Length: 181
Image (cartoon, rainbow, N blue to C red; front, side, top):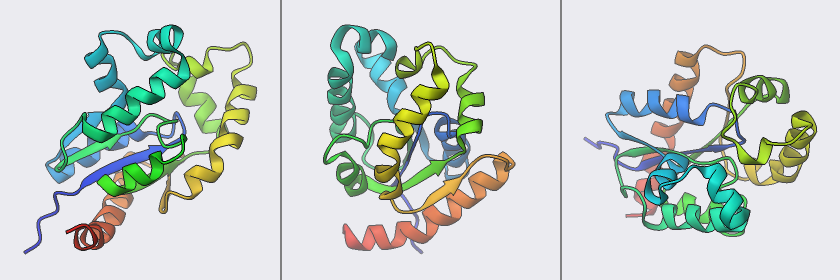
């Protein structure tokens, strides 16, 4: 019997639930949960906001690339990717080559509500958060839509979202494994 070990990568805009859904999905699969931002913060000994302030967005994106290339297990984990991780050229393809990729999606109203409670998102530390979110999402929407399967997270119970993600993962994992064997 085939036992899935292929990594699951959750991508999508900030505030769509990647970390929360990822923790639940990892528990259900018996996988390790890995949050790309947390690993980068731990590895470099400073928060993402400080990395942005000192090295700029380009410096942070370079750290994300290193994380995808070699900063986490090659199998048996669910990875919550930072909201902009797949945006630079070639990053979506790099992530897809490493495992099953699912994009989480939520409405702008939900994202505004979810991100209003946090101060650790450096790209949202502006006076008009709503306008910034609209601008960022408009710039990133096409890349998110190219990821493949999108799962809506707003207005749904967590268990339903996780079950949906796991159904998609199981359906796509066997095909991914055969293709990359």
